[in-house]
Image 1: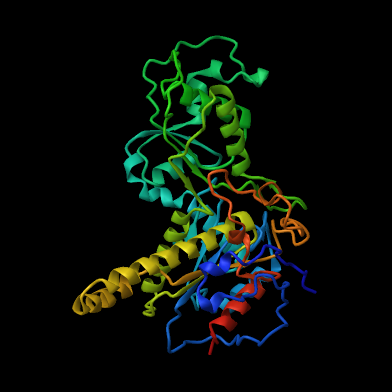
Image 2 (image 1 turned 90 degrees about the horizontal axis):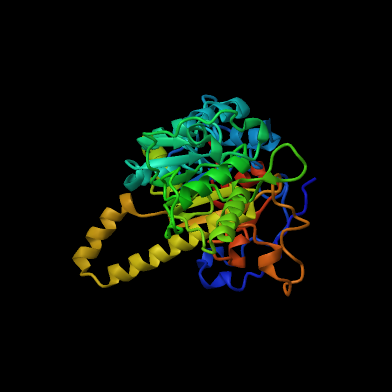
Length: 437
């Protein structure tokens, strides 16, 4: 039996920008089981028309719980793929995981779901860093776990320093763990590079070491071992990936995510300096740049498989209202704003120029909308998250998102709430009137 899930946030503010087709949607209705509604055909075969919609799947809490696959995920992909593992409609995997490589995450998904997942379909929290060319030639300090140096170089960064590099070069800076304190003082390094930026890939293992050394880098303006007379401000650029306060694994309760580490870093810096820690960029869900990058991946997939219909709708399926749902709704708002700008610009042009723009827009325009679908198999708690009394302080009660994202209650309200990812896929097929022949 499906678990009853409902969000209680008022939709009043949302109606101001949602297109008419989405008003009065299913955001406040309970989770539906797959037995409800019109059945979707499951006979696989070629269609005469190309799909004009695509899926963006979160992973943890939607497809997997730690190392365990959620049974509904296998059912969903039986509908989405043929016997050779080829998608019937375009799909990408958008995760805030960042302490791994695309290849390893694709291999993990392949083993769990039972078909070959290409690394090109996997979007990690740090994937959009490929676009930050202005930092690729700078000396960057990277923090996280897993193959952080390899990931940085794969993303285009040429001069990479790790936390371990700093610790070995300046062992006196890492003093919390008494067992790791040096018995003999090493000579100061003569050729250690000046750090020019900091990249935070994900939650590290030794938080105390990473927090201390990152603060040291910021307070020394990247020249470790040099004592400055005043705090440099603005500080070095910081690019942070994955803002999730919590994530869901095999445990019954959510676990600390990288967002929790960022909260620690921000507050320590402010406590020590009296100044706000600033970010050059925040990447990963719910940032718009991540969804823009995901749309690009979907379009590349459609092109590679010969699907010629323009991409109209994106469906983002996730379990975290503050990351997956907030991000998808924020991107939908961005798409609506882009469409309004485009229409206004076209109205001001000559009729001949308008026709040229229309012909060209088939290949360059964005999707028309991005609808959010919340599942109840991960972080989302249908008995919590949103207060029943709207007079309560929403910011304190609900908002687990990052401090730099303005809290808008309408953005945590999903377009649809369903029990699991299989129900989400069936719902989308019904909305798109999509039958596999």
